Image 1 (tube, rainbow, N blue to C red):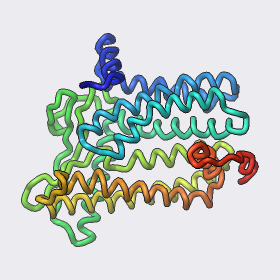
Image 2 (image 1 turned 45 degrees about the horizontal axis):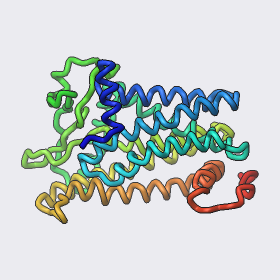
Image 3 (image 1 turned 180 degrees about the vertical axis):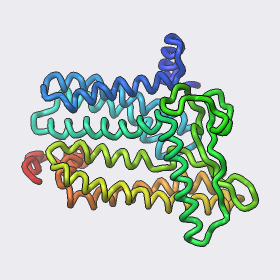
Image 4 (image 1 turned 60 degrees about the vertical axis):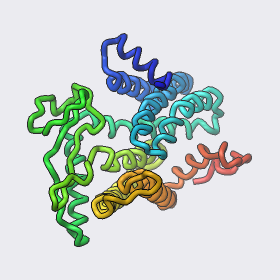
Length: 326
């Protein structure tokens, strides 16, 4: 049975004569415009109304990805995307009843989401950038495997899975390489990693580049309007390269484990699914947690905002204690 929210969006897309992925991107773009206006506009009342409209649209945009993650059995991303829609409505409710004390954190949250989504939209929507990120991710993993003495792998030709499900080499693709003008299939642009025996071990796609994790930190740091730009740049120069290096280790490990333990299975879960969807996800989330803690020393304002966001969950009852801290 199809999800009713996804079904409604699909019916609306059919009515408008566009694909479902185009409809999803349109919803995200509209939500991004409303939140971006709310972040940059200085009139509090107008910004609040714009944010109240934008939050549910952003939540719906991410919620529509949950069906895909159900298909590939990724429990972490299922939980995160499925919770995006109720979280969007919760944010609108917070905006509606937000106090003056909480307004600075609400503004930061708006900017955090906006400046997290903009890099991803640009890379995803510009095929040349999309392919460059995929290729760089694959090459980095291959270098790491060679460096660690686990070589013997090579990167295959860049491929594209079109919306119809047809997979062809990018060299045979006649689409626009500067503006994505057609829906892509589940794989999108991808580069296969090939072992010594000629078999394809894994496929590198845009999601393997850790662009989402980088975008989260970019948004969280750039949105700190009260912080001098030099401190923000310093934080970005620490966070982004570190995330990339950790991701290289992650990808190289997944390739090696998948190739070495091809027949391994636990409760019906193969080595790739276990390493990619469970072990690597847990390690990545823990690494992002440690990264955030490291940045709190450089950017105490970031810590203050996050604690305000978490206050309903940790039961802190004295909001005045951190209003002036820095």
